[in-house]
Image (cartoon, rainbow over all chains, first blue to last red; front, side, top):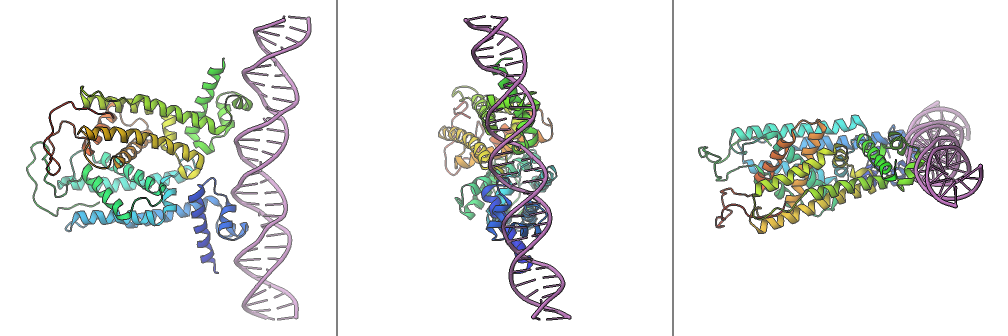
Amino acid sequence: MDKAERRLELLRAARDVFATKGYHAAKVDDIVARASVAKGTFYLYFPDKRSVFVELVDGLFSRLGGAILTVDTQGDIEAQIKHNIRGIVAVLLDDPALTQLLLSFAPGLDPAFAAKIRSFYDGVKTLLRVSLDEGQRLGIVAEGDTTIYATFTVGALKEIFTESTDRGQAWPREQLVEQLFRLLQRGYLRIDRALEPPVSVPPKPRKTRKTSA
Amino acid sequence: MDKAERRLELLRAARDVFATKGYHAAKVDDIVARASVAKGTFYLYFPDKRSVFVELVDGLFSRLGGAILTVDTQGDIEAQIKHNIRGIVAVLLDDPALTQLLLSFAPGLDPAFAAKIRSFYDGVKTLLRVSLDEGQRLGIVAEGDTTIYATFTVGALKEIFTESTDRGQAWPREQLVEQLFRLLQRGYLRIDRALEPPVSVPPKPRKTRKTSA
DNA sequence: ATTCTGACTGACTGGACAGTCAGTCGGGGG
DNA sequence: CCCCCGACTGACTGTCCAGTCAGTCAGAAT
């Protein structure tokens, strides 16, 4: 077994132990036991317990970022938004152990680390807000404060994922995608729906408008 | 100083320390130092560290429950729902230290701690879901899965409070109430609005219907 | 005045754990 | 065949901290 492989094995073991026992209750002894390796070996690959944790979370972050694509302006918006949602769902549910950790990050743990996670969420919110602003200009997002829309969307997403990872695989994946989409749509998306126009707004043109999400 | 007073002092000290350092990093030594009392005294009033925490969370929960009143069927529903929201906001913002603690909970970090907070949120969600079911019966809540509405609402609330406690008192209280109400209304409340009736549903009668929230 | 009571104290203990390091082992090269 | 090297080992150490308990003290009761 070469070094890279052993490292991976330790990462996987750490992930599993963190996910089942939580960061604090996860002992380095548990991790090495699960990896069938002596304690010293752990310290050949990682300087300390925290750094494995950080590495795990970083990995999930970047996979999540990779899953979120700007929506092509010309295509079927609904399909693309669903595709993005599906991508996020896939990343998170493919590694429920890590997702659990991401959702339940602890500010008290380490200020620098907490700041990193916060900035991640801030980034997501900004991305979302910009998309919503654009959508508003194009008439497919209801008028209102987009910062708040973004905040509550992220909050709702977090909560739904928390719940669905807590309860095992309770909700089938595609159903989750549907539910999330309908949530957005019901909440503030206005795609291809004949709505009561908000006080004196001329009816909008036809299909396939454009934004990112 | 009598016993009740000392107990309160310890509770307050614990709350502050928990809020600033997080549950794990909060040492009993920190708490007793803040309360200007010897360590042994702490154990005269509480069996252990966890029980103070539990007591704090229980207290917040019951205050929250107390702030939520069943809406009078005959009166101005909007005003009453806003009143309820205002009550919740007041409870949470009047004790930002505890609120911080609840919002920044870290389920992954300590099973016992996590269980306590999870049960808190489950309680809130159930409370909310029951109200929404009632509202649905009365036609002022959109049809759909109320469990999801509840989850979504709690998530959105968490996020908004996180943001508003993180950034100091950025949002004035009454504005927060307005925003939350509009969120619910836009999201799924259907009070006194001429809506597109969902596929073939006869228009509802006039004002002042009834539910709890 | 003396005893008693109970709130309070803080040095101490016992256990838990992160991290260390002297030593083993196996295989490859000389 | 033996030595070397680097991966690996696990008993050990140092630290931290929740929880304990023998003792102090002020004031109430007798």
